[in-house]
Length: 250
Image 1: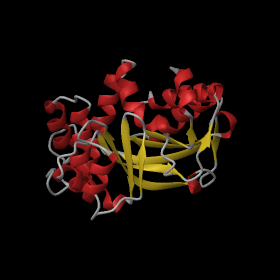
Image 2: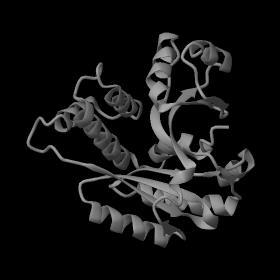
Image 3: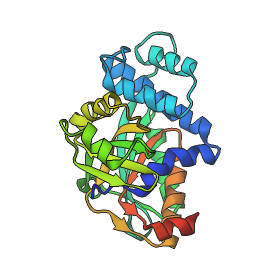
Image 4: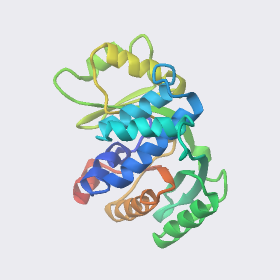
C-alpha cells in the first residue's frame, strides 16, 4: 500500500461541495504563479506548470485567471508577488501526524495562523523532523473509473514507464510513482486515451494509521481549519479510515 489517504482523494471535491470554491481558486492560482516563476511560462517546457494549469481547469478555474496567474508568476505585470514555501509539522488528535505546507509572502503571519488553528482544534505543533521522517515525496495521479478506465487498461498504458503502486479506491484509481516519473506516467495515460483527475507531487506517509469515527471527525475538522487559511497550500496526514468509518462520517 502506498499509504495515500482515502481522505486525500476527496479533498478537492469536498471543497467544492462545502462552498469553499473561492479559497480553492486562490490556492490554485498561487500554485500556478509559483510554477511559472520557477520554470517559465511555457506549458510545453514546464511540466510542473502544465500540471498546475490542468488542476485548475479540472476545478473549473476560469481561463482568464489562469492566464493572469502565469503572467504574474513569470514577472509580467506590476502585481507580481514573491512566495516562499514553509513546512510545519504537528500532531492532531490521538497522535495523528500532520505535515503542513505553506506558500506565503509573510512567514510570520503564516506561522502565527497555523499555530492558532492547530491549538484550537486539539492539535499540537511538533519539532522539525519529528513527523517529516515518515513522509516521502511521491507522484500521485488520480484516475476516475469508467467503462474504458479499468485496472487492466491502466496497467497496460503504464507498463513501459512503471509505477510504484495502483490502488482501487471505489470510484477512483490512485497511482503512486517516483516524483521524477510522474510526467512520464501522466503522459502515458494521455497517449492511451485515459483521462486523469489530478497529478500532484505529494507527501505520502509510510506509517498510515486507521482511526475511529470520533478521531476521524476531529482530524478532518483540524485539516479543514488549516486548509481554510490563505497561506496553507496543502495538509498531509498519516490518518486513514475504513469504508465503514467513511460511511458513518457521511
